[in-house]
Amino acid sequence: MRAVVQRVSRASVSVDDEVVGRVDGPGLVVLLGITHDDGPAQTSWLARKVRELRILREERSAAEEGATILVVSQFTLYGDARKGRRPTWHRAAPAEVGEPLYEAFCEELEKLGTPVQRGVFGADMAVELVNDGPVTVILDTP
Image (cartoon, rainbow, N blue to C red):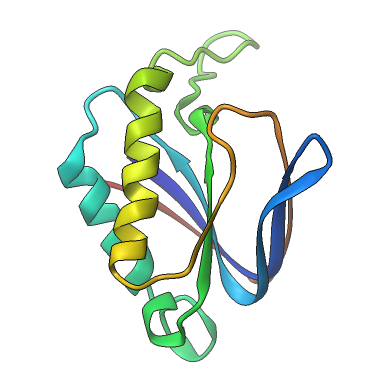
């Protein structure tokens, strides 16, 4: 499982020009990529890591601030463009594997007490954000 975590001052995600998730004020946007061998252990580890990551202002975490986390599924994080000009997506999990793990990741954050907003899995989404800092961290599960 791979996540690009961005500290934002505001963000939104839209599908067909309708806002489906947003962060109003300081928070995080997580672009979440899932691969074939991911499962519950990776989901739990990554949710806790994101929540406790001290990248908000004054080295505080989303857990400490009660900050909202906007989670957007992004299979393209597992794109491979080392050969040629067209990326391959073979490392990205198929929807039947990825969607339940995406939902489990969001639910794990919620169980931990984190306010969560979501994109729509598999949809063509427009993501708008103001990266605060800018601060962006890439996390891979062990």
